Length: 333
Image 1 (cartoon, helix red, strand yellow):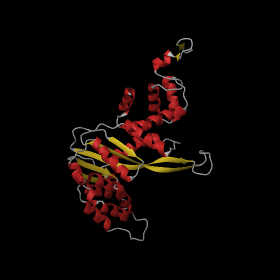
Image 2 (cartoon, rainbow, N blue to C red):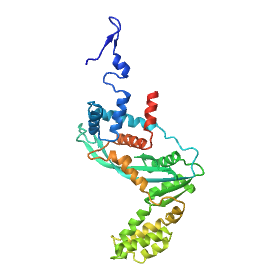
Image 3 (spheres, rainbow, N blue to C red):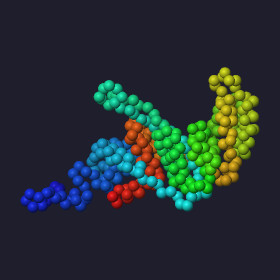
Image 4 (cartoon, rainbow, N blue to C red):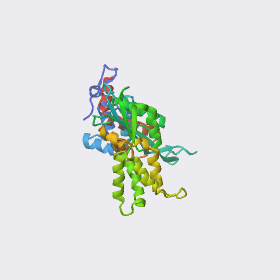
């Protein structure tokens, strides 16, 4: 049905009642349409999002329209601040980890064809999460920035989860030096860092065939029992006696010994369990799967460095339940 158009007087401006009532303009997108496009584009490939629009709304649009609206709002949603818990909580549980995201640089050669002149590589996305000890859901933060930027974001995320001046911070991670050092810089004496129990177990599992041929599982369980009772010296003693010589490159026992020995101050599993606190960093590792990777690592997806950072913050804000806040602020403006 043709759209009704009116003219104000013989030579006046043209009025389009439907467009004015629906608050849309020619080649424009209404706010509800922008939201629907961004909603699908945040979860699906831009091509798949067009199919969703057709299926649910009967609207035919190109993938470029979904991409434009999604990236526009992905950039804008970064300005939304998550409301911090009030008052500060007694204990905050927080974790940090990194995973790789596919990135592409275009126009790197002398030619003008950006489709051909490109370089693909991987960038580390650093994801942190934090929650009070009596909460179920975590608040997330993510960045492609430096370790220093990740540290500032980690502290900011903990603040949003209820970190106060007297809050105890229970930190968890895989024991990577950059994570442990960053925790110390950001939380200092206010916190205590614990190396993920299952990462320690993985190192011991690699050494088990050398130390207990045919009884790998029994030996590993025995060492895990020692660790849970904070009997770290007993585990180190069992490893030390069988360490491979320095000239041997394949040395699982020597590697496990070095890993535990360097982190022995961060293996207080008995203390954590007595306080009802976790000893594994599975929460942030699971967060990698459902916050950035579920969208940013779909088959065939490669991202520009600028757009991947916007998409990363879009995924984080949705995980933090800030989606509705963002659209409410737009509607008011």
